[in-house]
Length: 289
Image: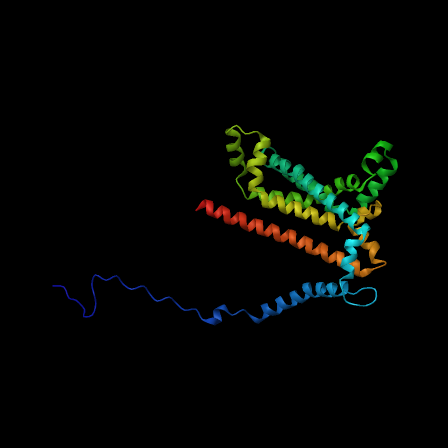
């Protein structure tokens, strides 16, 4: 004979336990973290605020945007900016076209040469830029006339190959990390088995899967080209950093304004990279689901 407790329905499902309420103390951030965050904020943002304030002071001591207007009206600044942007864009494209097939080839066909490739690409960091510039001057002084006229008569041809060399350490590691994150061998074997050529496989299969790494390598190269000053100064090429140094001798406010705009430009590039990376992760999640 079964017994039934009063007030209970034997067919009713047991009620779910009440969720535990977390105390506010669990979410409270320790005070030392706020102190470190405030110190870091002052350390990084403080100089930027001071530089922006200084860039607003004209030669007469008044606060206005005269220094920023001179950037637009100064033909020397515009010319050096165009040259630097041309060099940066061409170098960014060339270094990716050079390194992406190389890294794919080494990872698929020549894995024993990975250490050799890492050692070669690290040399531009080990060798100071002033040594590279000294070698370029020596080459310019003793090379045949046709080499000098073809290579050193314009900053676009004189600086781009060497900026590509300087960007190799950053480009190689960005691309290598991107390729390590995907199943490269399976993707390439599947593409080749379907009849695609190696060029088509790189363009339609490998590149879309490592697009974030490629953009990161290109943005790092652009930032390096916009900030390099040693080689261009010793080779007597007027790029944007060289022009900034020349302007700072007569109008420091304009030089600081250009520096802030270059910093904002670099920050926008990094923000675009982060946005594209997040968008690609979200798209990949949707396809998996």
